[in-house]
Image 1: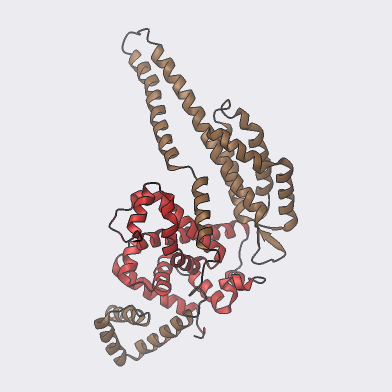
Image 2: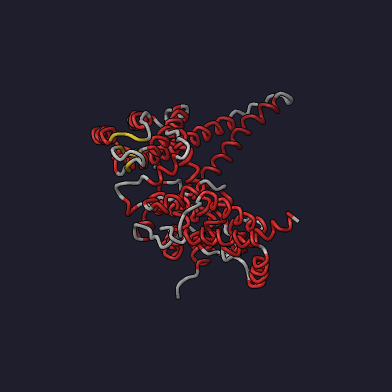
Length: 250
Length: 186
C-alpha cells in the first residue's frame, strides 16, 4: 500500500512541475481530490515552484556579446594543443615504441641466436628516438608556457573581489593552476635537456613567478597581485613566453 | 538558407572553426541559463559556456549524427557545469574551510556589484544554496525541467538516464527543495 502510494506522491510532484501528460494529469487530479495529504503536498510543491519562477536566472542574458564569446572560444582552441598535434603525438609514440622494439627484440633474439654484425639498424633507431624525444619535450614545454601565460595574464588582468571580503581579490583558481603547472615543470626538468636548453632562462623566470603566485592564499590583498604584475613587467615575461612558445613550436 | 545544426557540427568535425559562431548564436543563451542555474555566478557561467563549445569542437567528430545537436550540447554543458561546480567546491574546501551554513552567507553577501550577481536577491541566494545542496543527478534533472522546460523524456535522453529515474529524481528534488526552502514566498 505504501509503495503504491509512493507512486502517487511522485505523480503529485510531477503534476506540480507540469510534467505529466493529459491522461496521467487527469488521473492524478482525481487522486488528489480523494487524498488530503496529496492535496497538501501538491499545494506545497506548487508554492515552491512559483517561488522558483522568481529566480533571476530566468531571463538572464550573457553579459558579453556572442562575438566576444566566440573569440574567447577561438582563443581557448588556439591555446590547447591542436588535434593534429595530438595525432602527431600518437604517431610519435607509436614510432618510439617501434624503435624501442627494434632495440629490444634483437637483444632478446641474440640470446638465442649467434650474434650477427648488425649494428646499423640499432644506431638508426636510437637517432630517431632521440629526435622524437626532443620534439616531444619541446612541444610539452610550449604547452606548459602557453598555460602559464594564461594563468599569469588572468592573474594580472582581472582578479575578482572575494565573495566574503570585498577589500581583497580572489586568485584561488590561479593559485591552484600555478601549483599544477609547477608539478608539470618538475616533469619537464627530467625531459630532454639539450632540446630545452634555449628555453631554460624563460622556464626559470616563469617558474619563479608561478611560485610567487602558488604561495598566495586564495583571497589576497590587491597589493599582492600588484607585486606579481610588477614582477611580470620587469621581466617582460609575457612577451618572452610568447616568443619562446613560437620557437619551441617551430 | 541557413545551415542546420547538424551541418554546422559536421563542419566543426572537419576543423572548420567558422561554424562555431552560428552554432553559438543559436545555443549560447540557453546553455548560459543552464550553467547559471548551476554555478550561480555570471562569470563562471560564461566560462562553462565557453568550455562547452571548446569540448563540442574537440568532440564534434564523435557526434553520431542521430542525436539532436541541442541535446548533445546540453549534455556537454551540464557536465561542464558539474565539473566547474565540483572544482569550485574543492577549491573552497582546500583554501577556505567553510562553516556550516556558510554557503548561504557567501551567496547572499555579494555586495558591490549586485546587478552582476544572480545571488544578489534574497530569493536568488536561497535558491542557489538549496540547489547546491541537492545531489547532482537530482539537480541536473530539476534544472533542465524547471529552467529549460524540457519534457521528462528529453531529460532522460539528454542525461542518459532511464525515464523512471528522471521521474523519481524530479520528485526527490522537489521534496528536497521544499524542505530547504520552507517559508519562501512565491
